[in-house]
Image (tube, rainbow, N blue to C red; front, side, top):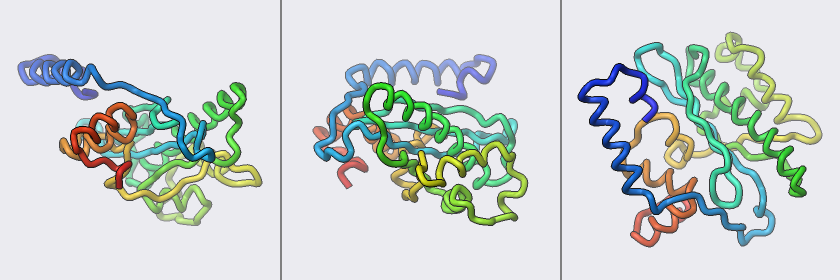
Length: 215
């Protein structure tokens, strides 16, 4: 969907636009449904996921995708081309994580104003081990010496006596924000969509579709 408006309309792009409209019409019964977790420790607790993938051969820029979830469905998300040209996957992932962390900080403040102050750091799922090491302060000069210093703000958020975010390793097959970075096979697309949309998950379960929440 993101690529369609980037080109001068032609037969191929019109066909792609019609396919998008058919998808929207065919999924009109799906939406975001928030349901309080049976686990009292997870009720009204923010969680997040951040990922990045190569955006194409036009300008060699990567695409950031992240999602923040609350009570079973997403409350904030983004899918955008990065403003800088990353020269490694670690750099692109770290940039995406930094953007997600900033959003988590904002939503934590909103939750506190509503009377639901977050007791611990917000967990951000990430599938790049080197990126996780960078946020923890690991000295990986060959991978990090060229990264813009402003993204190191996430280190401050993930450290100290009261950290606001914390990265944890997740398998790439179960990375829901992967849905926001590139085109996926139907099975993977459905699995990730079901993860971030409670209604989609319920309907998929009723149809016998395997989802990451059931695994």
